[in-house]
Amino acid sequence: MNHPVRKKNMIPKFGEYQKGFGAELECPACGSNYLHHDRVEIFECGEDATSGVHVAVADGKATVDTSLEGNPSARRHGLKIFFWCEGCKAKPVLSISQHKGNTYVDFEPLPSL
Image (tube, rainbow, N blue to C red; front, top):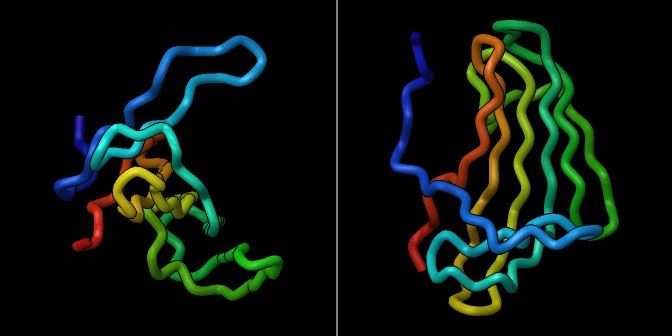
């Protein structure tokens, strides 16, 4: 099976499942469950397309363009959720991407603190 080239990302970790809420996402840097999301980016495109629809939502505004730069999937749709952590001030980015019929979820490398 061919997998996409992997960066040194961090595996998402979750707390215990709570009925009616789900499982708390934990910070990949310190393990805190006090993560706040403040930006979401959605990438929609045809297979291997060089442009598509990119929607970014932050600060009460949505912007739309055709750039696929930053798409976590090299071939199809992708989603990024940008977080900041109360526990350590890390700014992890959760990505969801598609590759050859599989869906991957990952924390992208953390920027230097």
